[in-house]
Length: 316
Image (tube, rainbow, N blue to C red; front, side, top):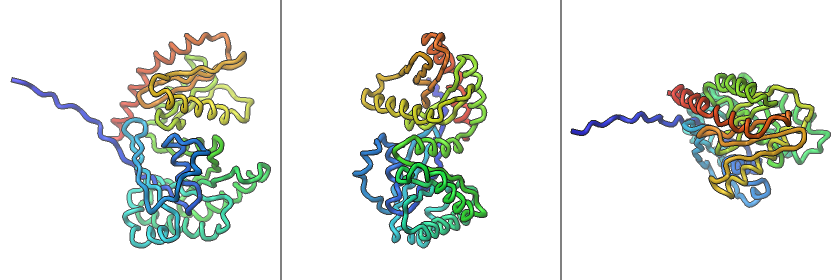
């Protein structure tokens, strides 16, 4: 007689993320860069989104972002707030509202944003709100701070009683990855435990900084910094290294597992870590041999795999 063991199956957890903003504000471009491996210049061939485009993005194993990219033409917007209100705004975990910094119709943009917030307040009052002031590359560099601060002030005022977090973004630099990393970070359960383990790992390998990237999107899901950086542009440099690595991965499929960048004062390692992450370790001590760092990364994998499993159980 055969005996059958029941398999324990961890079901995915779906979190609805609404991506809204007027037509042409750049929503689909950013979604394509982060979730579909587009590079910035290729987004020019993307057409306008018609009504709502749904995509499921599996993130960190069993967390699935149910991304609703909502077309921003006026007819669609009016429809969302009238006949589709309950359908679109119910059970929303995150609202990401994108504003084109060069928009000529700011009053109208703000009006639609407030209509959106009213619907969220009625249907998903616990939702987190993020505003992206987008296409900042079109603003002269010396005016970017001033313009962003002014928009941020307006948006925080308009959002009351809800709270919103604002980011400046552009598809042409690291700001887009930084903003989406911060947003997704808020959705990860058990993140404090992950960070405390990352801190211990950084101390063991004597790293200046350790970054954990989600495997599919390369968004930073956790990081630990042990030494102050003099370089104000380090995020751009890290972002460039990661983007190059990501492109190499997609060109060479799964054979490309790790990468090392080194000069006389600095070494950075990117390596496959857990099932769902890559790790990047930055060191400024050139005397530490590569083999030692790679061995430490390998030894830490099991612990972080275990943490991910605990995190998955935590959802249920």
